[in-house]
Image (cartoon, rainbow, N blue to C red; front, side, top):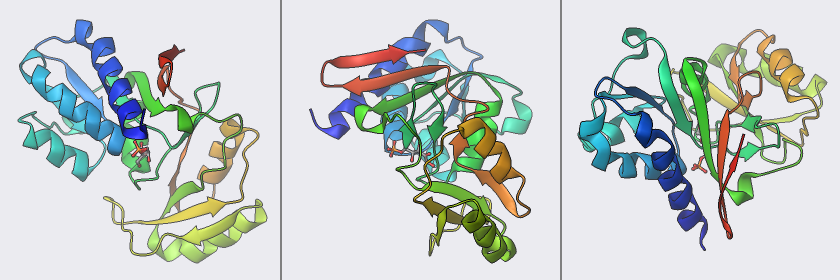
Length: 222
Ligand code: 5RP
């Protein structure tokens, strides 16, 4: 199977996972990226079975609206029963690196408001130790150089993601050569650097369920 076929399979598995819980007033939290896009496309046929969605990016909001799914502001919804999103890496504890699509801050906010985080990913995303994928850090633009120097002190090789402005008007630094032995501690350590808006470690609030697309089928890990 191709990577796209594995992503489509986990998107379908996520539909099966949430479908029995949908009501006419249900508002879902929806992530960002190619796997989330496949989920949104499959969700479209259920659009009359739930109220709508909160999106973690402008791109996902546009895709949802394109399918006739109403998009709500998180400030008006309170908590959501499910947040469904992909990942760049995920470990056995369901800690993740996210933010390859630069949507990490809004992803983390919607995830924080979710009763259950369902991570959907193809098998290439499963790792033993997080960090092979460069860890994204969203920064306030004027703090970029300062934050980069602090990241060097922590052992990372920070690279400015040129030409990318986040939905929040900020910039992204990607941390290369930065293997993360203790994701919960490192997430907190990075958040403590002045000028950091969010880092792409989703460990303090990891996923509750991982639907992993493999050649043998979709594995469900909790
Ligand atoms: C975007 C993300 C995505 O979830 C992550 O990059 C995975 O993307 P894809 O499903 O395209 O592999 O965190 O900021």
